[in-house]
Image (tube, each protein chain N blue to C red):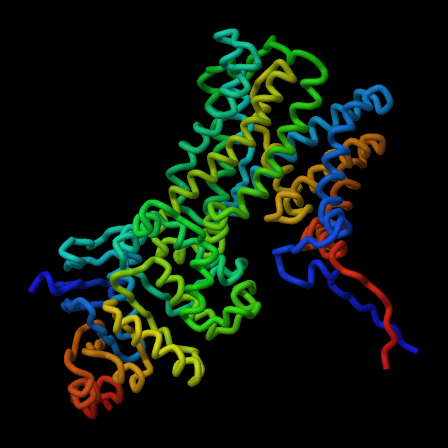
Amino acid sequence: MEDRNILVVENLSKNFGGVAAIVKVSLHLKKGELLGIIGPNGSGKTTLVNLLTGFVKPDSGKVVYQGKDITGRSPYKIAEMGIARTFQMVKPFYQLSAFKNLIIPLYSSRVKKLRGGKYGDRDDVAIDLLEDVGFERDSFVPYKVASSLPHGYLKRLELARCLALRPDLLILDELFSGMSMSEVASTLPIIEKLNGEGLSIIMVEHRLKELFRIAHRVIALNFGAKIADGSPREIMESEAVKAAYLGSEEED
Amino acid sequence: MKFRKERLDRGIKARCEDIFALSSYREISYLMFPRVLPVIILLIFPLLKGMIGLYWEKVLMITCIIALLSLSWDLMASVGLISLGQALFFGAGAYITGFLNYTFKLPPMVTIPLGTLGGALFSTLLLLPVLRLRGVYFAIVTLTFPLLLSRFIETTKILGGTEGLSALSPLPNIWVELYVPVIALLICLFGFRRLINEDYGLVFQGIRDNDRAVMSGAINIYWYKTQAVFIAGVAGSFAGAFMTHYYQFVGMPAFAMDYSILPLTAAVLGGVGTFAGPTIGAFILVPLSEILREVGTLRVVFYSAILILCIVGLPEGIFHYIRRKYHQFERMVEVG
């Protein structure tokens, strides 16, 4: 059982002041699984991602990744172990060109280790990665300064920055938010392909239709607590999830 | 008939943002000219000692020292560490050099390198706990360190207390005095420009733009910030170490506010983040302050007025302005 799970979270809790952001959340992720996390605004999705990647330290609970306890480790160490994340608010290096944005993760010791002690020609690797996420290779786009790129490209640049690390677990924090329909349509196959190649993925998402199409399993959060866990179909039909999104009748 | 000014990028610039394809001697010289000319002027200036007079040669030396400090400031700024205390580097380098020469009678050839490295190491260790601070919080802490150290020396009376350490060994000859700062400046200027464009330097720029994204790229940002502070410290401490032997004295003025504020002003005036900018800034500020000595008491007024005019007129910095003009044609075209 342990071996097949790449990530196990037990009773994770976090309070900000008096606000309970995450309340005793437990979850597990099998190798190669694509897990969706949904929930209304303020339900703690991004906090959960921050807890998993070390940007926020939990008050209690445990995060076990590949059999190792990583609770409370610093973000760079967690990334070094192979958990890559995107940020909901895009965080590119605005003054650098798109392909140079990728040089930074490619410079990490993790990539060096994976490439047998050599960094190699990072520029080529960066351009290849950009092509993988849909940057036009023979155009000027990969060479443009990040601050001049449209939002959809920046989102995909985030994705490429994660892939540069050659992660074992990819956490996408609302990758599709702010993307146009066509951009979503062209990005979905990329994620499906990565998952098909055996990459474990956690997707935090508001675009439920797209998520339900590709996710193997979905977890729903509300007020920081897990309210449902099951296949996309089960989640869609769950009364608790409907109540969370639409507000239950008693609350009115 | 109405006219409008039209700006066009020169061909070599328009082809790509920062990758140049050189196809002719004309283009090579177009790129080399702004880099080679200042180098030649700097190297020839000390040779004209007889013509220009020793006074202005000394001004050149001080200018190089301030330029080194402003380069050191700019390197820290390029990892997002805004410093208000370059005097820390200067003072640490100066005192270590002075101490080694005063106590162990080591020659300048030995004390200056040791003071440079020792000063950088000492300052880095001192700043290590505050590297986690960002922006203005880091700046405030750096402002206090030189003040703290000079008060510490004053009250504990170590290292000569308020008297300082005097009668230190002089530099071997005038050529060393004039050429060492020039060469150190050129090494730092071109070295830093090179460094920041290497992949290693990209990590620095990444930390400046967005430290959380660098962290999630599996890179320990504090380790890189430490390295940046050490490199900046080498440049700053060298300035202090050199000046100790030039003055043959080291005292509390080594931690003076001037060494913190002047480099920062030079960087802002010249253009932050380019290394050439802060150097140009220093080469305007220091000579300007000397020229204005003739005005007498109104010196500070003129000095401040010129500074304000420059900063209001060219908020991006002089270097950015010159570079843009150099890469563009301007012509008047008819409208309508």
